[in-house]
Image (tube, rainbow, N blue to C red):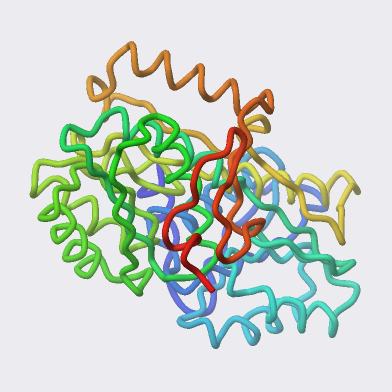
Length: 349
């Protein structure tokens, strides 16, 4: 789906424009500002773009996608969009918090949306997919699947929002098997597949046979390494199972396509919730694991049944997956039921 979507979008710094249907009346205009990895990441940005495409089809909107080349270009990109008086400007990066706050203050009548970070500004609605809950399921599945007893995590940058994924993954793995060994690594980049592959092959050398890729466009290299080493990877953000059929155990999907669509719908309905941060967890359908023909046979029926049972416990509140942002440096336990925190938290000052 994403490859077809991208085929009709000319990628450039300025914009990608999608025309509304000819018979659309009073269609709203939406601008999306991508993260620095841009379209074609087969991950977060592509998922948001798919949400806009669905809104075009269902709701008759016009949309523009602006692709900054670097984080330093975020504020100017947002300001340029605000100057064009779009009905909604949606951002797709946690690095966009301060740039969006600055531009929103200068354009108080402009509606903004930001995904993956909390905001309180009156003209910004924020949404956070509970990726820690989805990562919990990924970690549980990895621990139930590993043959070596060692699993891995490769993050893009060593930053709090990526730690959020790791904490969920760790908690899920230790819930499934308290004795599983979990390697934690950070590649330092969100847009270099070669680096992701290098890090992953090194982890495979340490015995890790299931590795969770949380690194934007770098994740494709992590998945390539799984195919090359005959191990398993777990994709992230979008359904990446197709990238290496038989070698992607599953993908932890953040339904940012749904969230983007909901933001657009709220503007159309006159229900824009500026100043609020909306949470999308397992219960709300905001995160989940991808199951399709590309990972068929990798997960036994017994494991699938266990996965559904553990998911129901999260949705009911019986299990509370810890959020990294709620933890304090040096904290020794986390979650409900409580388990020991990983060394990166327990030993932090």
